[in-house]
Amino acid sequence: MPTRTARTAWNGGLQDGSGQVELSSSKVGTYDVSFPKRAADDAGGTTSPEELIAAAHSACYAMQLSAFIAEAGGTPQSLEVKADVSLGPDETGGGFRLTGIVLTVRGEVEGLDATGFENAAQKAKAGCPVSKALTGVEITLDAALES
Image (cartoon, rainbow, N blue to C red; front, side, top):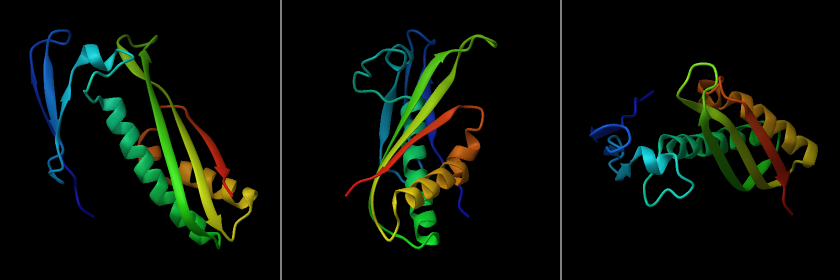
């Protein structure tokens, strides 16, 4: 299996510095990062590690869920996956930590009822490689079929 690479160039200190994260393997873009914008409600045109983790998690989860739906005898027509990754203070170690991830999935699936979809969704939550990598973070799931 391949290895994927990203790199960040950072200049300055935490509060006054800024950087650019480059998606090196795919070459699809370079994105600005800044701690003050990372910690603000409005990202102001920059990305953050949390947003990049959310992107990775939602994509990985969608792929894993589609596999488990097929394994259960269903056919996914469409899956809409959103990952909300929260940053907050680390009460035990100081600094910051990821305080939680909420995965929300809505699916149109042929051949599975709501229970079958929920089972596949829970299995994907546990089986997705990004979920496995983030075992130190509480991950909650809101999964539902749409008609």
